[in-house]
Each structure stands twice: as C-alpha cells, then as structure tokens.
Length: 286
Image 1: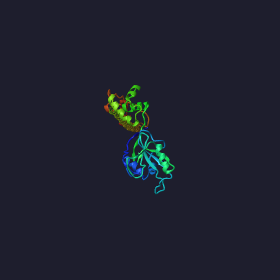
Image 2: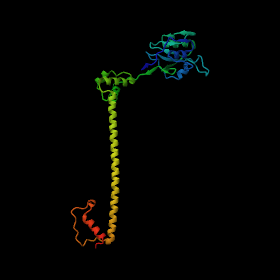
Image 3: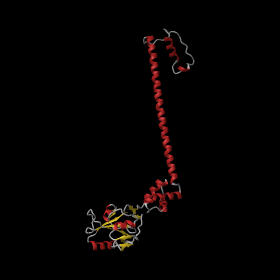
Image 4: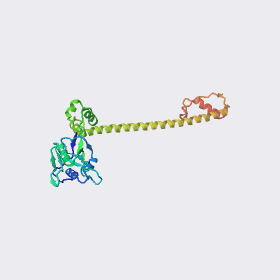
C-alpha cells in the first residue's frame, strides 16, 4: 500500500509531443529527463496496473514511434489519477490543462490507434528526481507489542494495544504515535530512556571500580612477593653465616639463655631463642 507524497497540478500549460516535460511540470520539476523511456529507465517501476487513489506516472513504449538521437524509442508518459482516469499531453499544439482519458485502457487504445504497437511499461514512484509516492507498511498486533516494549518500556495487554489504535497504521509513523500515547498514558519515552542510561552508567562505573580493585590486588600480590623474596634471601644469608661458624653442624648453646618475656617489636615474628642463638654464635660463642 502506498501513500501520496506530492500531488500534481493537472492544469499546467503543455505542448503536444512533450509528454515528459509536461508530467515533470505537473509535479513541480522540469528538464530532468529527455524522454519518457529515459525517465522510465531511471525510475522504480511496477509492472501491474497503477494503484487506485493515487497520482502516479505511467509509461508506455512505442516501438514504431519517434526515436531519440541514440535511436532509442521515446515512448510516452502520462499521469494515472485516483479515480482511474489518465491525464496526458495527448493533443497537438499548446493547451492549458492536461487531456483526460477515462481509463488506462482508453489511453493505451488511443495511442495504439495512432502509433501502432504499444507496450505498457508500468507505473513509477518518481517523477524526475522527486519521490511522489511512498510504500506504507501497516503494523500488526505483534509489532505494536514489541514497539511498546522498546519505546514505552513495558509490555502492553491486548486491551491496551486495541485501545491505542495503532494496529493497521503506518509502520513508519508508529514510533511517533506511540510516543504520544506513552506521554498521555504513563511513563514517557524520555523518562524510560533516562532510567536506562542511568542503569548503563551505574554498571559501567561498577565495572570500572572492580577493574581498579583487581589492579590494586595484583599490585599487592606483587609487593608481597618481593618482600617474601627479600626475607628468603636474608634467611639464606643468616644460614650461610651460621654454617661458617658451625661447619654446618647444629650446635646447642652451652650457657643457659633466658628468653625475654616480649620480643623486640622488629623481630616479633621470629622466636627469641633462635635469634639469641644466632647472635651468640656470631659473636664467637662456642
């Protein structure tokens, strides 16, 4: 199903034989194509009969008719009207107002009578570079449902869909219509959009915070590993120093050592008896 975008003025002044120019002028343009067949080749054509209720250009080829400088047939173009009649630049000379045929068949029959064979090429969506009709995609119940989910932010019941009046309307106008309906009957689209954007922002921040935490944890682990390596190196050095004094043989102190009740703050993590023994032997104790 198509809708009219541009309505022609059929009361133009035309010259017989200049059909493409006449049709272009009727739709408010001029000098785009040199002939009807060149225009047809650059149009979106539909081979079936023109739709009722619309003004659209219709094209016929005339194999025995006039030809252009490239030996291409020029053909003819006219305008199919909403009531099924055809407006054409059919009369010789200069005229005000396009000539009317009662039907497409009457138009084809007349041109066949004067020019021999006529081939109907179809009707087009454009005149010159102007799009004069546009296809309507009528929305159904399911499409209304999913539009509501995406725009209104919630599903609609069958009763709500029915009362919205959207079923059977133009698909391309549904979004605007639904926004109006949503504004009048509940949460507006901008509110839903705002809430959605806030949710996205919150999740993004949460993810960023977790990544920072992970990065900090990794740094902490790295620092602890360095400290552990340093501690292990110091223990090896102490062990080497101890071995140099004892020849690698564990020696027990000959003098009793009184353990302090509280170890110094810097060495709380090591048993006092071990430290005292190490100090004792490093000082030359036997």
